[in-house]
Image (tube, rainbow over all chains, first blue to last red):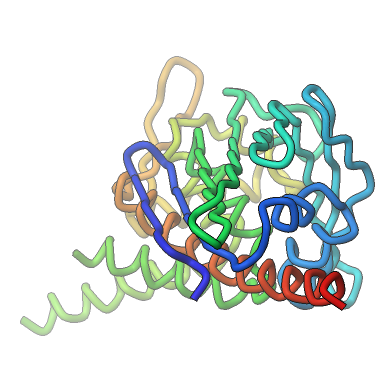
Length: 165
Length: 117
C-alpha cells in the first residue's frame, strides 16, 4: 500500500495525502519533472493527458490537455509554477477559467504543494491540495475521473441523501 | 397518510429529475460558493439565458436552490449544506488521488526497474 495517510479538512477545503515509495527522492521527483513520465500517470485510464508546455521554473507555466477515447471530450489545464526546489518541493496553482479562457471572477485558485522527503529507506511524498471554492473541487474531480457517469452517480446519491435528511 | 406519501414521492421525482442534468448539478455547486445572478449563470454555459432560467426553475422546485430578488437582479443561492458538500467532494477527490497514486507507483516501478538493469 503506497498511500500512508489522508487528512481531509472540509472547512479549509484542504486535503493532505502522504504516500511512500521504495525508491529514491530523485526518482519520485522525475515523475513530476519529466513531462513524458508525468503524462503517463496524471490522466485516468482512457483519458490520456498530453503535457504541451512544461516550464518547471518559478513564474513558468505547465499546460496540458486530456482527451477522451472518441476524441470528443477535451479538458485543458494550466498550472502556474510558484515554487521549485528540485528535487524536494514543487508548488503550482491552477486558476479556474471561463470557457473563453479568461480567469473566473473571484480568482478561484487551486493550490498544490508537493513535498518529497526521505523516510528511512523509503521516500515520502506529501501532497497538499487547497481549494478556494467548491467549483475548484468539482473541476479537479472532473479532470481525474474517466468514468464521468460513475462520479456523477455518487454525486447524485450524496445530494439526495442530504436533501432527504 | 396516503397524500403525504404521494407528495414525498413527487418530491423525490423532482429531485432525481433536477439532479439528472450536469448543468443543473454545476449550478448547485456554483451557487453554494456564493450567490450568483441568473444573468451571471447565463454567461457561464454555452446555452441560452432562457435555458439557464429553466434549469434554475427546476432546481427551485426541487428545493436545491432558492431565488430572490435584489434590485433588478434575480439572485440564486444553493440550498445544500456547503460544509457537507465540501466533505463529499473531498471524499471523491481522495478516490481520484488514490487511483492516480497507484498509476504513479506503476510508472515509478517501470522507470526504476530500467535503471537497475
